[in-house]
Length: 315
Image (cartoon, rainbow, N blue to C red; front, top):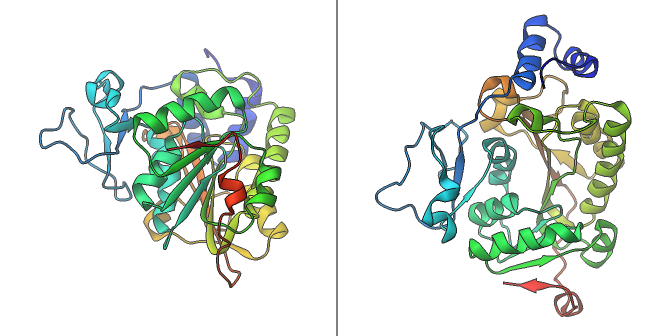
């Protein structure tokens, strides 16, 4: 991307009030930088680390390492063995809201492929069962391969529409993750492509899809359970505005203030929700928010009918 499009410039003006921030944001997308790779340890760290490690951030989980820019962890034998999972640091930031969850028996990841958030949740929360769903069938193989490689168990991988799951798994999960499909604007900050990512039609189409998935996902959340919503895009329509819509639509849910992320509070909303921006140098960018269901009651148990149905991959 050699020069900014008019749509990118318009977005920068909606995101930031001052021209300096606007220019830094646009420059981060027009001239992508190489972000340090990041690994999530699925097994205990070896006594002798195979990579040079950068100093951790204040919110960084203890099982995550940010490496030197020159590191190539995906080529290391420990990766093939499943000792760690390579994850963008923006994704680590987004998933870090899960650390506020408590008393977790069942975690459900609604949009799970390729598996990074599922692996994070399994490592951070150590649930009795992890269920990872990917509605796009051709992406399910990638999800299954990563869960197997990292020896994530007990776990179930499946491919179901969120509307079906809202009925069959109502109020069963203490934690539900929605890493929502989005316009993918942050791909540009990594040197990738995302055709039409700034066009209003594309943004609004994604926002509508996110609302549908989030509304269905809310049905799975047990009383006092948590719903984590996150994206890897910048437009407010897909982030803050979806979150505000959700709170109006589901008043039993409340957003949680997370002290560890106070410095990352989004300036585009008054509710507690958090962002990192590409110009900060930590990663390509992410939005994240954690809701809690204030209803009183107990989780429903998974039915044997669900567990025995065909099409489930058990680990």
